[in-house]
Length: 294
Ligand code: ATR
Image (cartoon, helix red, strand yellow):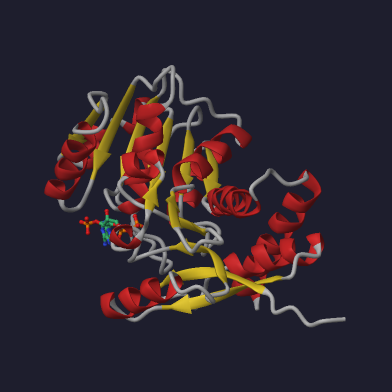
């Protein structure tokens, strides 16, 4: 038998030490018996990104698909040959598919991944009041899909530590879509969490096990979903507070899973059987469990 080198897939970002993506994608490659391997490509800075992206265009480069994570989701866009219209709306790319002709296609699966997880949680955003903490890249992807879905949520209120950043983000989105349902608020009381249906945390507060909260936990009520995009720790102080108040609590592992499945689907050029998706999810959950409990 002639040895065929595997096709390469992977993730670019910095840092990547705790990434669970290799576990998820390699589990799928193995189960599907695809001759491919998913690797980590930590890139130090913009210069390394430039060299890596230029190299990607070379005829013999074996890389056919990449995920893109912090801090390169926007920085990668100038190197992409075709940015998919949805990723253009978001203004960021988290998935690259590379054709046999070495053309680079940029996609965004973060927003749809978030919506798929909401669907799994049986939360329909139609007519709902939504409060968001944070105005970074994740909020950008989430806001884009929440403004695109039809019928729309009733309202979206955003609080960010740096208010100007939230204002700029909403203004920028407004140049591409109807963002009139979004309001930037100057303090967390004005998020009106006590009457919200969904609270989303996209800030990094909680990532290091912080016990202080950005909001008053008493404002959380039983008829709401509290969604923290952080999944390590699996239960941030915000999610603990949500449970204590009787609310439904969810972490972002489902979003990571769904964005990964969608990226895989783009690379495969087709949907994959649910049994392979289950294998991907189990690999993610087991990987996280190992990180959490050693
Ligand atoms: P991501 O791509 O995951 O959204 P990001 O773009 O770096 O990451 O955004 C991080 C978010 O966490 C920002 O909204 C940031 O607020 P600033 O815009 O004011 O920087 C928020 N954040 C980080 N540390 C925070 C803290 N200690 N308190 C409040 N917000 C914080």
